Amino acid sequence: MNLKRIGTIISREYFIRVKKKSFIFITLLTPLFFLLIMLVPSLIMLSGGGEDEVRKVVVLDNTTMLSQYFHNEEKIEYQLFDNQTTIDELKEQMDELEAFAIVNIMPIEGSLDVKVESFSKEALSVEIKTKVESIIEDAIEDIKLKSYNIENLDQIIENINTNVSIRTYTIAEDGTEKSESVELYMVLSYLLSFLIYMFVLLFGSMILRSVIEEKSSRVVEVIISSVKSFELMMGKIIGVALVALTQFFIWIAFTLILFFTAQSIIGVNLLSDPSSIEMVSTIGAGVQMEDTLTGDTSSVDKLSSEIQAALNDEDSFVSSIVQQIKDINFVYIILCFIFYFIFGYLLYASLFAAIGSAVDNEADTQQLQIPVTIPLILGLFIMLHTFQYPDSGLSFWASIIPFTSPMVMMARVPFGTVPGWELALSMVLMVITFVGIAYISGKIYKVGILSYGKKASFKDLYKWIKYKN
Image 1: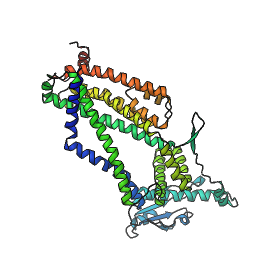
Image 2: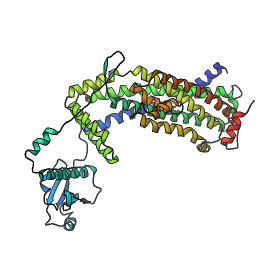
Image 3: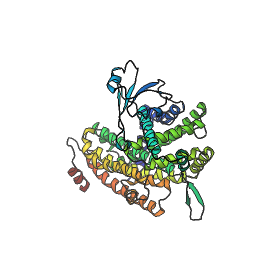
């Protein structure tokens, strides 16, 4: 293996790609896209985004007990009718009443249960539906509580309502305590793992297409006369890896520059501005609504209570978050990310290169790609489990197995709970597996790159691996 020739191929693959207009365009545009993702939702919340039109909701209260609980709001106006009016009459008068929706509260059944139905010419918004449901639920609960005839009930309820927020600390071997934020680690682990998945899939596919293009245009026949097939494959893989790293670091730098520039121009400090604290509360409520739809609200209830407790002490909340960010070992995390990104990419890029050499066009790659993409997707799904349970058995084994370890191990690393021997074992297995896969892919590449006219099968790939020259 001639390192000088590999270096020449790496240089060629690198500069061909970085000089393309599409590379420059995507590299510059992606940070702007990330900036919009970060800032636009915040600006919408801070500006009180939404429709300014007031919606009229007609409420037919057949219980005759709930009307007193409906009060006009900023964007919802309630018009109340009792059981002297029928729902059919209100439907006929819908245009005359200028009603956006009609809510029919049916008579109360046993155990004070009530059924509600709505009628509207347009789809009922989630906001109106949620608010009406909340009003009726609170009203029924209030009526049920009053039926017990307990004196000073309101005062008792107010006294027993309690918010509990757990501040987490970890105790180091030297006995020092450090404040931790599980939510912060979860966000960080998710972002890092997903970035590895995205980059490996994106640039691995780039290798596949590049090999197919050179093979179909017969350019590879000229190149292969000057260099060995394995040198060509490795040069191409490493060259694209350098392109990926270049693009990644430019994205990080540009995103940070654009974010802080936009923040200084807009004049909004998302950590200290009072309206941003209100935004955090709004986000918490939105997340709670989303998880309620899935039927699992236990973790969200805890998160909501923590947010509310933090909002009661704004200075403590801000200083705590800033301190927790400062305590994160970013050097350790970034070094782990670079290792797993590089070797995860090299592992899968070798497989993609072998697949590209075995076909004449991209349409023929679907069947051969399935065994390669399944571990990637499986690693992504296990990652979703890992950033909630970083020390589970599934998380451990998936972070050791090389085909899933790039995503899963990076979901564990931010928590700081990975023992040194586990990380070392995972890295060693990753390197050994890459060397083995590169050797096997090189044998497939050597035969496949000069094979034309026949769609290769798994049986053919096995024969090429056993082929001796």
